[in-house]
Length: 265
Length: 289
Image (cartoon, rainbow over all chains, first blue to last red; front, side, top):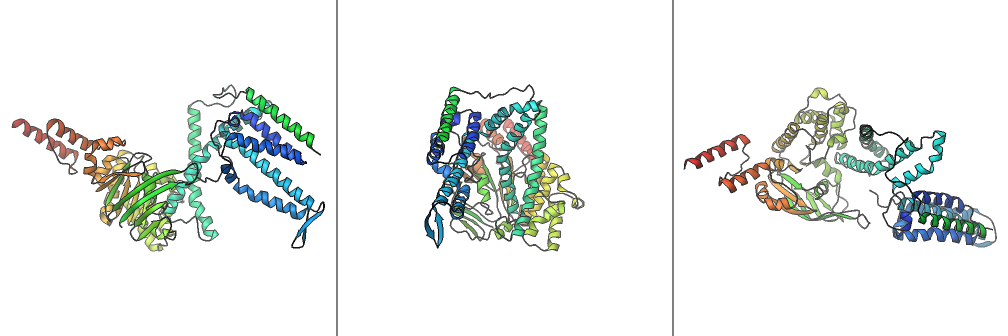
């Protein structure tokens, strides 16, 4: 397993953020993502950054862990920054690099766009860091409930999601096992020309697909044997309930939003 | 090929919250041509240990030597491919590694990766298929049409076709019926004898360890717990029970006979029938005097 993959990994904890109703978290993040694009002044950015960093702080997940996990995205953030710095031509010329003029507006643009990026990724990765995949799918099912009136298969969709999430670690284990077995038979996955390495994937993929299909069939059989039936009339083991905590957090978030709109220019 | 571990330690995902020390302080030597059983409870580090034998894992600390090959943490440039040609590994449920369209192609996969010539591959396909007790007219069939037991045999044939000097077996009979288990184990034992292989068998079956191995390594929590000849190891019932292992039923029975009826019979791999006759005669002898 790749330990640097933080996006999508759940870190158990007992913070307020962990204990919030997943629906609260999803809705807050949904609106946060929209609000980020409304920010355009120093104060509004400051408010949003404080909110995001503050909630990361509350989760008590070690900051180093999160920063390390964002490694793959740093490149995009820095790339966007430089793209804006070099491409925007607004405001006054601040200084020149190798006779290339850098404008003040470009610097502001670069910083704000990459800050937006950073905030988006930070907040969305908080969802998966503090929420188990199962509660996320439960929340999505509950949030999409109104669509049932339009005969949209909400329950089936949620079930598909949770089954696929459930089998990711299993498939990863399986991949490792088979790649070791094939490496023992002389396949080299790590070196050699690209063409050879592409060919080396076949002995890995075929057994993986075979076992995935077999597993799916067995799962379907086991579900049927236990009388599984879709969403209609099915009760839940874990009911999602909004508590006082959720209302407080939502109220606080609304304050933040209002703040952002007031400080906009 | 001689295999030796010198103070080997292996840590999964070091310097992360998920760090896990799988083996530690492991030192032993397996002389060339011996049949070694590695026993231990689930999670005792057996599987991690055997993955060092063909360089799938490189020790975090210490050194592993297999013949002339050496695996060490700081030395990256071991010729792993040459090592893997010498060490064949049969993993748990090896049938999961089958992927080709025909049995023939699947068995040929290993040797062709190592650059064995076409005629030689053909010869090996037939000899390894014969070794696992399958007939040659199955060669053109798809491995996925076979029964579980047959798939296992094809997968094993795929490893045997590499003609390794060291054979590593990770619970090769798990999930087979008793007859299949005995056939496969007998087959490995015959191969071991015929070709002078060095065989390392990871097993949960104390009966297999007693019947086939000439040396036993008992692991617990990633460390060496006991080692010695099977009979010496299985004499220490309390120590084995302490790490969740049992003593083979035959040994247990003989120990009981000695303790309760004062009949002592040294175990020399007698069959059940022979033992029964022996016990019978001892009992009668005891009654007459």
